Length: 159
Image (cartoon, rainbow, N blue to C red; front, side):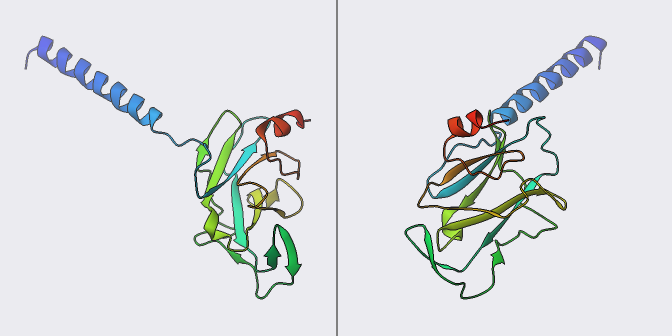
């Protein structure tokens, strides 16, 4: 192969790699709310999301209209594939931060229980929960245990 053909081949391979990378970048997941899903959006001031995950579990209290009306009928259960030592990794990124998306029907009593953590370091010192009857998309800021149901409220509350 002569030098001109070799250079053309190298240039073509570079263009293909760039095109492939651009296509993959467009296909990256986002945090857009989707039907039948619960979305937990999370913001860290420094944007350092490496190794942060969420522990999600189902609880078995009786719930009516977003209120607990009776004690648990059995012990809490982590969602399938989730354990404290292997939390759910973020599902996507947005201009807010990262997010986790889970099927809403995973929470049969409508109570979504979660802890954002990195190893044994919890972002909030207590367990966090909300009911899907309140909304299916929430926003959480680093170091704040408040669950916001609007992005604007979460952004305004940042310290």
